[in-house]
Image (cartoon, rainbow, N blue to C red; front, side):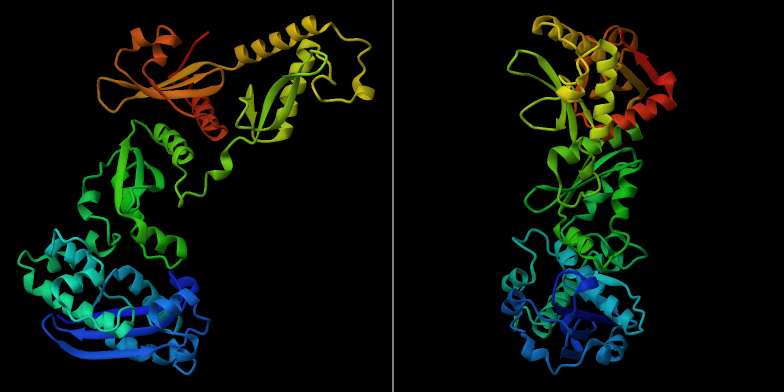
Amino acid sequence: MLYAVVDIETTGSHAAGNGITEIGIVIHDGCKVLNYYQSLVNPQTPIPYFIQRLTGIDNGMVANAPVFEEIAGQVFELLQDKIFVAHNVNFDYSFVKHHLKSAGYELDTKKLCTVRLARKVLPGLPGYSLGKLTHHFGITHGEHHRAGGDALATADLLAMIVAKDAEGVIQDMLKGRNSEQYVPPHLPVENLEQLPSTPGVYYFYNAAGKAIYIGKAKNIRRRVKSHFSNNKINRQKQDFLRETHRVTYKECATELMAHILESAEIRRLWPVHNRSQRGFLPKFGLFTYDDQQGYTRFTVEKIRRSHKPIYTFNTITEGYQRLREIREEFGLCPRLCNIATSAECGCESHDEPVTYNKKVSDAIDWMRRHLPTFALIDKGIEDNENSCILVMEGNLYGMGYINDKKQQLKNVETLQKNMEPLQDNDYIRNLVFRHATEFPEKCVSFA
């Protein structure tokens, strides 16, 4: 079995928008070096200053170097029919595969990551960066952050791992679509194997323990693994793989509960790699305030943290439509509802503030009474329980599990005690109302 130990220097962190500035390849049989190749590469784009400082490779050094297309044939010849080995292999492999494909070559080889191998075969070390490993074991490491020096050091590390691999870890990693082939270098594969095949929400964490991505799933284990089943070359995917260190989960009884919890947790933790739901926060609300004459007035405005709205809306048009319905129902003044100016008002006179404000108070009570309070009851995680999603006055209150429907559904106050409160938003609210409309038999209404 022959290995091609590879290291590259690049202009950035993802292959889709960056070039290779240097490549080093060591052909190895597990015991000794059989061949060695190293070349600077003209990336045909300026090298960022901080990368020049890190690698020592500047624009002048690569000005007369070959572009990757010129060396692609030689690189492909060295790599084909070998095991592709690198320290954090998915990074190097994504760049090399992408640039070979651009040059007309299709690379398809098995991979080994020396970070993951070292964690398995050499457990308990203080760190697994290439620099820490070579220092710990006294491996000669020539030029740090240069492709040739790093590739030779990685090859020596590989030889040590091969010699100490009494349990056949390398062979296990090379079998079929072994998880070790594609999971991030810092994520223990055992962490994935412990995930359940049930609905729920999963959390990816970085080295500092901060959540960087939250997702929902019908099958948590399958969905989490799918994040690593391809090696996309875009920046977001490569940053995500590099930052992932741990995965946890919360099991849910139903898909709807997983959907709700995902949305609530994204808004609680704001993970950096969750982008799709950031636009679903309600933007407008129905508020009241007292003017200088003592009249309580309605207004539709953008949401403010300092004031709690009576109700929320996605658009200002939706908010004014609801306000017009309330005004007509209770005979309120258009001007005092901020719908019309004094000239457009049409009111010959107004009630005294105390009388008018009673109308406003009645309108608010009416609106709240006409907003539904109900529970969505469904299967639980355990056979002897039911899941419950509670909506109060048109807003999501929370969700949880009950084990005595007859007793706990007697009144909403009793039910509240068994619910975990969740922050409401229009996105979640629409999910729940849509489900309630589709499955009315699951709903228990409260007067």
